[in-house]
Length: 244
Image (cartoon, rainbow, N blue to C red; front, side, top):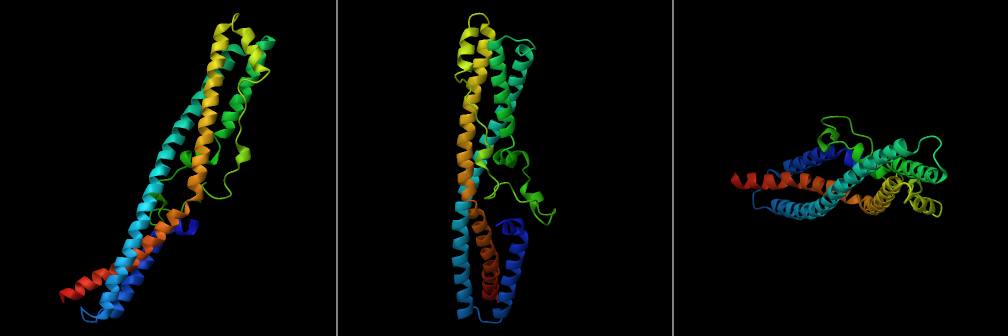
């Protein structure tokens, strides 16, 4: 699959040259001959196949682009959560904090480690390490390394998620609400933000996996366009033959 996607331009040109060679073999035939009628039929069939496949690939790319935007937002939210968590630790988690506050600080450490680890998931790497299509073409640069969206790239066990308010954290939070309400409020906001972020990432993972499983549509599109590139010279040759 990666070979086809990494060498699209070369495949298009090769198919076009093959089509031109095929046209050259029947160019001397009369305009209304059976050979040119078959050439026209070849163009209609392969052109229609290419159009249908292009529509399917367009839907896939539209969904992929929308998912990329959502992943970008989730990545930005992850970065914002990490900054808020770091600010919480700097403000409240000084040495010698009381037991209840220490329990919240420990929980924030776990949540921060979770989001930091999830930032390296393949779906986020697909955004941060993306390469433009034009630069990926062999004509302009060396083929890029295979994208992270491969069958063996995603490991669900690498996803880290914790319960923000567990049996140890919840009582500590309640005991801090009256004496230190600002700390309790800040932690509550962090916990809520974390739960929403983890839920969003889980949803994005499911959508990303679905698109990855159907990534073969991009290969089919390339192959269909190769067939169109092969058939195009026949249609052009027929038009030229009719003008003779």
